[in-house]
Amino acid sequence: MTKLLDYNGRPIANGVFSYKRDAAKRTGALANWTPRKVYSRDQEARERSDIIARSINLINDDPHAAGVVDAFATTIIGAGLKPIPSLNSDALGLTKDEVKNIETQQKQIYKEYSLRPDASMKMTDGEIQFLKCRCLFGFGESLEILSYRETPYRRFGTQSQVINPERLKTPADKINDGNIRDGIEVDKWGVPVYYWIKKASKTGQFLSDSSDNFVRVPARKGHRIVVLHDYITKDPEQMRGYPILAPAMRTFREFGDLIGAELTSNVVTSALSLFVESENPGTVANAFMNTDDYDEDDRMQEMTPGQVWYGSPGEKPHLLGANRPGNTFEPFTRLLKKAFSSATGIPLPVLFKDIDGISFAGFRAAMLEAWRVYTYHRTRIGSKDCQTKYNMVMEEAYLKDFLNLPKDDFYENMAAYTNADWYGAPKGDIEPYKAIQADIMKFKAGVKPLERIILEDGGPGVLEVATQIEDELRIYKEKNIPILGEEKKEVEEVQPERGQDE
Image (cartoon, rainbow, N blue to C red; front, side, top):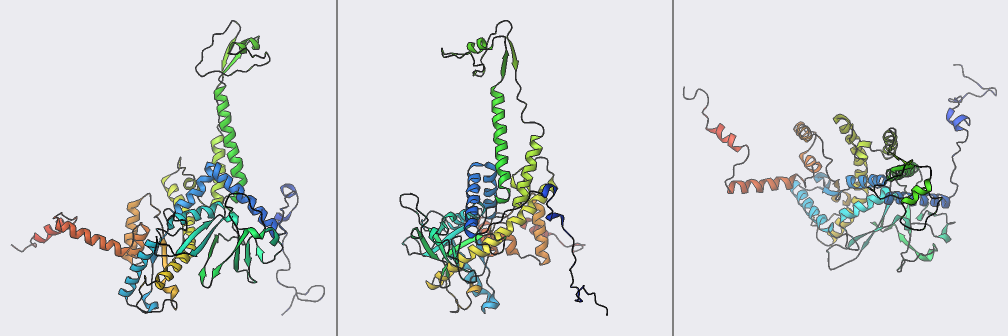
């Protein structure tokens, strides 16, 4: 077999030849394109802080930016994600009835806990989830501290405190500490072990960034999680998150300036509705003055809307028309909105609730694409943050004998005992009848359980629905109220069979 050799007589390795790429050229439009790199963690932290400040400013002042963040929070979380215990009887070595009994207890335990999980006793667990989701997309991350405190107002001591992510930072005198990355102290494997959180001043005054004004909070105590720090990881070795508006932040800002300038132009044009042509403009302007302070150089005066002025010979009024915005304004702004949609991953009709000129099939496709993105975030948040708190609550319930188990093996099978699926508000459908028919066909084909159908529709679960229907049917029978479908059945029963009397 003949081998290809180089000029030194060595075999030529595969892939030694490659083509030059135009993306690396420094001519034409790429001549001045030299992206700047960040060479220190402190510089990276300051840059991220500036991005967050601009993001929050946009959310507070720009209606489109505020709508984007609210759309994510209300769709993903809404009133809150709820757990549906999903225990495996074979894995736990229990009977079906024992598993159902445990799941019923767990539902009641979480329902009680979710009413007062907040350390300040102000928010439910659903409201905490909503706040954290807003922080996740507005600040780029959410920060929650889990602690334990017994109070006479609730049976559970596990409590939650949502912290502003901007309080997580590296103290000024710890910048050269190689183990602290943007406020997070890590071990040699990059596992967070401590979080440096700046204290809040009692008087609201600004505190310096000295380490004396920080609290070094442990990431966990034993197997109990203390700090829940959530962000969307998009880069290797990433330690902090970035707002969802970051890729389109410049466009958002310029779009807001464009809308503001156009609005101002319309206001000015509509107010300046009359122009008077005269040989003596000073005299004309003086006719509108109600004061003796008059400068002959002034040629513009304010008119009260609806005012009538009687001119003199030689003075010609000209009405000004407000021909703004132009014909290209709407297509141009729509193009910018498409850029925002691409940055967030949500189609324009859904993100901005703009259905003008869109077909039925187009809007349905947009809804499905948007729901794919929302489902990803909902699944990630439910299986990460929500499940972590749920595990801690179930552990506390077990230790306080609120959760009665047939076998004393909770810690040996803790993951199996606390397994749950997280569901939120249903996505809805613009063709509900077809959606119901599709669920029925999937159920009959054995590819989708009835439990999941009920949960996706916003119901509590198949057991609760069956119990409710059973109670309702009993009440209807006691009140002698006809039940839909039974009248036809009774008629069929009294009909004689064909040929019976012949």
